[in-house]
Amino acid sequence: MSETLRRATTADLPALDRLMRGVSAYHGEFAPMLADYALTPAQFERDLVIMAEADGQALGFYGLITEGEPELDLMFVADAAQGTGLGARLFAHMAAEARALGIDAVKIVSNPPAEGFYLRMGAERIGTKRPKGRITWPQPIFYLRMGN
Ligand SMILES: CC(C)(COP(=O)(O)OP(=O)(O)OC[C@H]1O[C@@H](n2cnc3c(N)ncnc32)[C@H](O)[C@@H]1OP(=O)(O)O)[C@@H](O)C(=O)NCCC(=O)NCCS
Image (tube, rainbow, N blue to C red):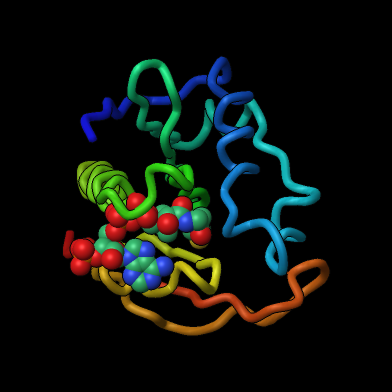
């Protein structure tokens, strides 16, 4: 699949919100994760939100918090585009951007089914976030070390 990666703006918020809510990994038992969650315009201005699109259609995106403790806050590939390597291309883009910013490690709190993806991407499992509030399941925590 040939897609373009570009910085997302607040104008892309509705399309990315639809994409995020359409991903079936967040239907069923993990649905509470997104139930009260909303993307905000401030996020698009503050964080590095990069989207992949083809023929004007959003296929996936990531959000990297670059202030304070750097964290991969958002990582979604639309169901139809999963398994095509798009997640890996978005992840590689994120890592290159983080390295260019002089970031030494990116924290990732993972949805449990995505754990294997982050391991495959070279992230190191460093612990587990305990259940709290609406998140009633343990979440794997990773660091991607940049070697800066
Ligand atoms: C997790 C996600 C981003 C991966 O994107 P993707 O486009 O499906 O993954 P890719 O096709 O780029 O896969 C890259 C590699 O990771 C592996 N991989 C992908 N998802 C995996 C998983 N859940 N478990 C184990 N390995 C996985 C692939 O097999 C591939 O390995 P290879 O290089 O040996 O062929 C995507 O499936 C997704 O959006 N899932 C739902 C939302 C979600 O859970 N996001 C993470 C929030 S923390």
